Structure formats: structure tokens, C-alpha cells
Image (spheres, helix red, strand yellow):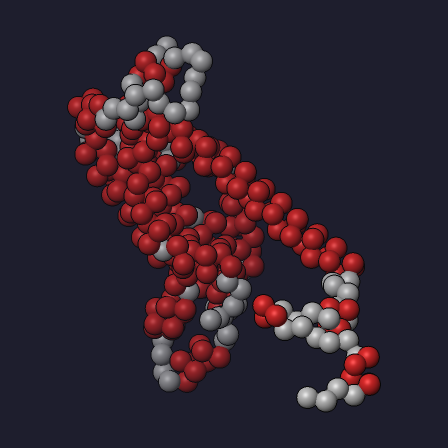
Length: 311
């Protein structure tokens, strides 16, 4: 091969080891300093965000972790000093003894009946009231909505004494009817569903009315299917609140035949002595249905929280 004088003065490129060096290397001054600093700051911010999220998640989960570990250690290990997070020995005696100390199956059944029926009935009545306030035109609609907002701001303890007196006169104390009827509707549920119904397009209702559908058919066959994420989200709120509620079931029941799990578990908290092992084992068992329900409707729950319109 003949080499010209011009070619002999041109720098020769090397392709050894798959890397091109020579003139190309001299034309790659590298990433500009400003851009490189931007990449470094983005990486630092990302790592800081992950670390902060991990610390917050650990702080939130720490009571749950302690509860589970405390239910698996002997009573002496729980109250020993200095306290430790990890058990020195593991045992399942608390999960066995709690079925002997309390009518746990009866408490479980009562809690499922109370929380489940309140959730179903409240979803029905809340959605009906919310549909009327959001989609129907009638005199006094705004006044009714203002009253519901005022009820939303009032704490439940204010109405506790007159409500108990009324139910006692009706002979409904220590009964499921007396526990469920006052919870049949909820101001928060009406407000929550009303805001969701307002986001639905009215064209759907108008089309149904043109086809001859009644208001009940529009509510039941058109609006409710579209509100499924909001209903599931509100249902989880209702179920969790009533499942963990202690005050109302404790006041309305006088024996364990109608008592719920929180009221039964409060028996382990004495004035001078608290049985932490049995209490933590019962708390873990009572938490399982709520976790299972959340896992089943997790996707719809997130959609119901984040939704702002029709999908």
C-alpha cells in the first residue's frame, strides 16, 4: 500500500481492543462540567430520597414490628430491663392461651358482624344521600349539605349520652341493632361520595333518561358501577374504623355475647397489671382481616384516593 505525504502526517487511529483512540479521543473532551454536576446532584437527591423514605417507613412500621415480636416472646422477656427489640427466646403460648382466656371466637364473630353490616348499610345510605345531593335538584339542597358539614365537624362524644339514653329507652342496649343503627350513615361518607358523583358527566344520566330509565335505575345501574373505586375506598375506611372502635361497642354491650375484639382485648389491661403478651397476640390476630381486606382492594383503594374524574 502506497502512503502519500498527506496520509503520513495525519494521525493514525487505533482500533485495538474494540476501542477507538487517537483523533476521536482528542474530540471527546468529556461531559461538560455543568451537565456532570447536574447528574451528580440528581444522583445525590435520588439516594437521599430513598434513604429518607426507608427511615420513614421503618419509623411507621416499628410499632407493628414490636407488636409482632412481643407476641412471640415470653412475658418475662417483654418486661425485662433493659428492653430489647429482638426476643431472647420465641414462644407461641400467647396465641394458644388467648383462646382459653377469652371467648375469642365469639368476639371475632361479633366484630365481623358489627363492622361488616355497618360497612354495607352505610355504603348504601351514604351513596343514596350523596346521589341526591350531587345529581338531583330540590329545594333546601344546599341547607341539607351545610347541616351535613356541621355534623362532620361535631365529635361523636357530644351525641353519646343522648343517643345511649334513646337506645336504652327503646330496649336496644346490648344488641346488634342498637350498635349498628346509629352507624347506618356517616357524614364523611356522604361528603366523600358527593364530591365523587359531582365529577361524573351528566351526559350519562341524560342518555339514560332519554331511554326511559327511572332515577333509581340511573343510580343503581349507571352511577354506582362508575363509583366502584370510591365505594371500595370508603368501605375500607368504614370497616377499619368500626373494626377498631372501642368506645361505642364498650358502652353498648354489657357482656361478651355482643362484645367486639377491642372491648375484649381491653380486659387484658388491668389497673395495675397488663398482660402484654396476650394483648399483643390478640392485636395481631385482630389485625389480620383488615390487612387481608386492604390487600384485596389495594388497587381500587389507590384509584379511589387519587381519582378526580371518570376512567
